[in-house]
Amino acid sequence: MALIVQKFGGTSVADIDRIRHASGHTAREIAAGNKVIVVVSAMAGVTNQLVEYCNQLSPLATVESRAHYDHVVASGEQVTSGLMALALAERGLPSRAWCGWQIPMTTDSAHSKARIEHIDVRAINESLSRGEVAVVAGFQGITAEGKISTLGRGGSDTTAVALAAAFGAERCDIYTDVDGVYTCDPRIVKKARKLDKVSYEEMLEMASLGSKVLQTRSVELAMNYHVRVQVLSSFDDKPGTFLVDEEELVEQQRVTGIAYSREEARITLVNVENRPGVSAGIFGPLADAGINVDMIVQNVTESGTQTDVTFTVAKTELARALQIVKSGEGMPRFENVHTDSGVAKISVIGVGMRSHAGIAAEMFRTLAEKNINIIVISTSEIKISVLIDEAYIELALRALHTAYGLDAVEEKMV
Ligand code: ASP
Ligand code: MG
Image 1 (cartoon, rainbow, N blue to C red):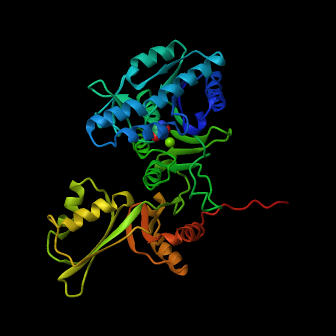
Image 2: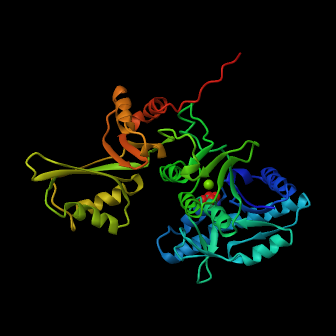
Image 3: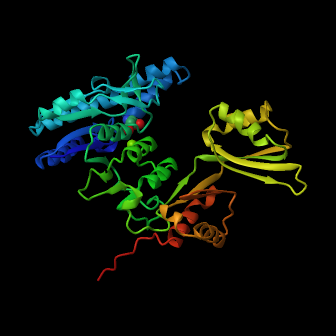
């Protein structure tokens, strides 16, 4: 007998029919002789509505208002956990619904983006051994001060993976509205393929680059605790994509997937005085203000006395970043500043890069052939990212997908 964690996302529990349908996946595991912990999200759209109510009264300015916000937005998951328990009862399956505080699952007190600190496994273990299904409200926990906390948007994924780790589950099935992880966004690249397996590290890059299938934090947890995660659709009965250790990937592609983000903006400081401490002078104050800088290039002029510095920040933080740069406080002297929010970042990702040469060159050649200009380049061991004009994003994705041999082979009709 194995323990399986099943997580159902908002679209999989969007209405009563879908909750009934989802409970069928649980019934199937029980019939196979397994124990099941079910984790549920709020019904589709509910969290957005709750957030909207909060915003009408108060934006998330103070720590106190964040705690109140958590008290409100955590409620969506409580509703679905109870409904799921009722749906299981309809099938004759005994269960118990759990809020985060009842487990208890304790978190730090960073309200609205709390991190799990500890999961008490005793009460749920007793319930499981009585033959009950544990139905856990995702996304929520309780702080040391006894206040309800939430784990950040998309946080039910993290609840599920954390429970799978704490209980030593054999598998953590994340049921969603897509049937797995794709080589690229199938809405843009029609020839994108579903991956059978993807390594934790690759998934981490894809998740943080905006492939919204899993919350980034949940992938980090899965990687650290070697949780076997499967992403699959609750609407059909096909196997999904497994997150695995790199060693488990038998045949390594050069590139596994291509991700993109329209969420960054470019800032260029022109003719910055060139002396030691310039970068610290620019990026120190931005970091102090909590602004995340992603890509950076610095280029020294021929005389060596001046340098241009280009970097990217989230579009939503562009105005604030600009204000800090222009305020001059702690900043080196520079002549001018340009910004551009019409940019997009494209990243090719693959652990195969560790052992294959020429992948970056191929990316640059492919973009050059399409006459697409590269504004900034950054690389890591398993990723190459370029910043380009947003207008060319679809063209670039399709061209790269073909160039790296990722296109699905069309099945010929006989
Ligand atoms: N309901 C929360 C959200 O919409 C958490 C989740 O669904 O994972 O962000
Ligand atoms: Mg989600």
